[in-house]
Image (cartoon, rainbow, N blue to C red; front, side, top):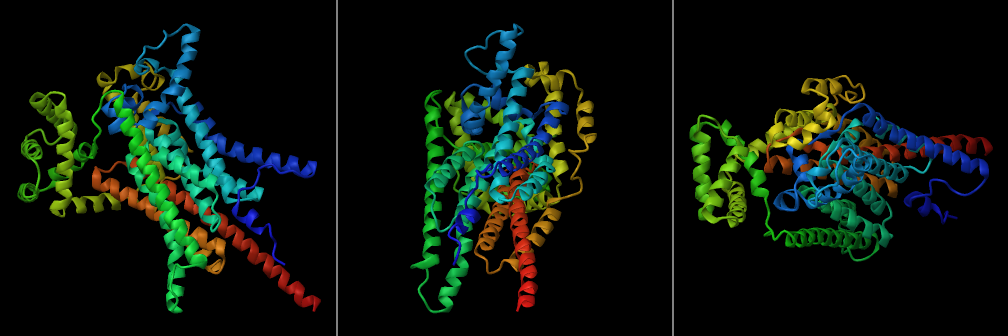
Length: 553
């Protein structure tokens, strides 16, 4: 007779400390403490030995600028406002000790101090611990397996380095980790629908979208998972001459797809509405600023020969673009042929002054819309240079290692050291007050933990992921739970690659842009690893039982 509790133990999270005998309870508690210590040690180590890192000027804008275009439209608002809560609480330490005055009503630059930044980073590390612990207990029910997965998490310095960095990427990484873990729980629980999980997924998706614009792509995570699960059922039904997606397992998965699409669209709409509501306070005109980001992608034109660049610009001019966009194109031609070279930041400042001079403050709205039109014209012109540049950067992303991404965070922090005049409030902080740029880089190069994965590129990670995928497929080809894990692994790695390629299309490549790719691949790798352990354990038990049965006969 089948075990009625099998589904509950296999597909639902279990309690960390379960009831039972006293010895069992204390043993579970000891294992849980061991897992927690394993996940917390890297955070404690980095907080004690590595100064706060900064995602260059972006982080400065996110935590110091008041409500406005930059903190609501250019950067999604969640981190820009949520980060100021721990900053304020940390700043209270300085206020209560008498070393700092009460903050002004802007609640912005005046709350930056060593204590406030430390409070922010401590909160980021605490949130990372919660997300990783959630991942560990989701992937394994047996405590020694949990400890093994926790060791794998703690050996990966990428997440901890971003938690040590001020900037929205930290919150995006943490929420994406929680979102992908919850997605795995939802997929594994099919055909059951747990309303609490779906509601929580919707709110997590809302959070990641309000942290980074590109995270809108994550709304496709569950639909892709369920589509992958549906394809074999459709093929089987069609080969037997039956109408697919009517009833049975195929119909259930189809219902899950519709639900996943509805939840994803609802989260995107809610994020858009929340941003529009935030625009009402400072009287902002809601609009996309993707064109401003695309300016940095235009640096590729500097690498072209003058003849080819001319042909590309002519093709863009042939598109149905408005007068403001044509003005930007003419100014772009001048900037590309100047002796100083094309600097996107300086070009953006020049455009701002031109449009404000022509139209006043409303000129900035027209500028954003004109830049959006320029970006669209680049895509529709189909010149080939944009796709070639994106493929080139995407290929380079596959060759980057975790260590190089971590080192880029130290490099972006040093950018602030070399531009103190634009961010004077940061000069009083420990990172920039007590350390020279060379000393900061020496901390990274001399930290064994941060250098742990040098030489391990994403391409090599992918080969290891592929080996695990094949193993799980071979051992669990007819097992329902293995199919869920395989579909999830394919969906996550595909979505991670898609996010990196989209970044390469929209702007020039930066090492930190590979974070979603590494993160989703790492989570799916751990899911495959946990499932592989389970399948190997079952095969070994079956092999041990079979000889005993023959001997009994």
